[in-house]
Image (cartoon, rainbow, N blue to C red; front, side, top):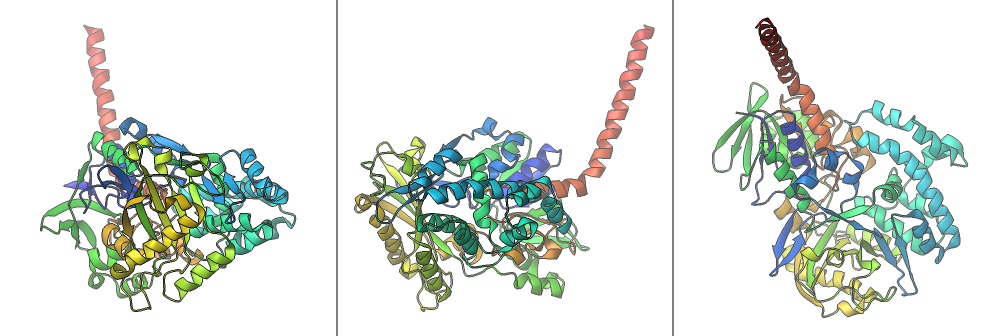
Length: 551
C-alpha cells in the first residue's frame, strides 16, 4: 500500500514524487517506457550520440527553487550555460544579433543593426522583467483569480507602470495585446521583430492572437536566469530526479504502463497495469495528458457527463511542430558568423532561422490550411559545441525544431509517408544559412507530430499538451474546475504536467505546485502522528533524565 502513485515519469511527475517522498509519504512512480523522463529524456543513438527526444533547452526551471531544494547536483546533474542563449543570423549574411545573459553585451549586438532598437530592448527588458517577477510568483502556486490580481497589484507591476508613458491603462493594454502587435510597437528593425516573434512563437499561439504579449515579454527573465543545457543531455535532469526519489526511499518502476485508474466509492484506490497487476494507494497523481488521464485511464463512462464532455472539448489543437535529431561531421558555419565549422558563440544557444515576420506568418497560414509549412521556421541547436559528452570525439549533434506542421493533414497524406520529405525541407533552411552542412549529416531521427504522439504520449503532437491560449491558461487550465491540480468529482485523484498551470516547457512548476496541494490534503494526519511521537519522545526523554538525576 502506497500513499501516492505517480502515473508517468516526466519531469513534473518526478518533481512531485520527490517532494512527496522527502515529506515522508511513500511514493511509487510508474513509467510506461524503459526510461524515465517523458519529454525530458535523452537516448543513445547512431553508435554513441546522446540525442534528446524531447525538450533540450532548460530555461524556466532555473526560476524555481526545484533544483536547489531537491539538491539535484548531489545526484549527478551538472548544467552548462547556453550563452548567448539565442543567435539570430541575418538572412543576407551581413551580421547577426546575439542575445547574451548580459544585457549590455546584448544591446551592443543589437546596436550594430539598429541603435534605436538597442535602447528599446533595454527598456523592454526592464518593463517586462518587472511584470514577470510577479507573474513567476503566480506560476509557483495554484492559480486563482486572487493570485493573479495580487501579482498585478504588487510593486513589480507598479514599477512596470512607471516605465509606461501611458500609465496603468497602457500597461494593461500591453499585457493583453498580441505578441505580434507588442513587438511591432516596440521595435523598428525587421531582424529584431523576426527574432523576438520566433522566440515568442515557441509557446504555440500565432503572432496575432490576443493575450499573448508575455510570450515575448517573459524572455526578459533570461537575462536573470540564463538558459542552460544539462551535461550529457536533457534527460540528465530526470535521471537525477529518479536518483533523488530513490535516495529518499521512493520507487520508480519502468515498463509499467497503467491501464486503468481504479475507483471505489467515488475515490481512487490505486491503478491496474497493462499486465494485470493491481497497485493500491491513497491517492494517484497523473502526469499524463489530461484527456488520457480522464477519458482513458479513468474512463469516459465513469465521469459525470458534463465533465466528460468538457474534457473532450479542451483544445488540444492540431499539433504545431516537428523535429529532427541529426548526427553530423561538422557544426554549422554560418555565413553571418564564419567559424570554419568549429565551436563558436553562434553555436551555444538557440539558433533562430526565421528571416522575417512575414515568413513566419506564411508558415502559419500553410499550417492553418492543414499542410506542412512550405518554408518552415527553424530553431537549430548544437549542444556538442558546449558539451563533449553528447557526441563521439570530432563529431557533432544538430537538433532542428520547426513550425508549423499539422498533426491532421488535409492533403490526404500520411506523416509516415512524408516524414523524409518534410525533414529535407528543414535541412534546406539550414543550408541557406550554413552551406557547409550539406553533406555533413550522417544520420537523423525524425519526430513528426504523429511520432511525438506515439513515443511521448503528446496527443496530436502538441508538445504543450493543450493550447496555450489565454482562455486555457492560469485558472482556466485545463478547465476552471480542474485548475487546482485535482479532480473534485473523484477523491484522491490529482493532475500534474503540461496540461495544468503554468503549461509546457522544462519548468517543473506544475509538479512543485501539485506536491504542495497533495501535502495539504494528506499530510495533516501524518503531521499529528509525528507531533504525538515527538511529544511522547520528549516525555520519555524527560523521565529518563529525571531518573538519571535521581541516581
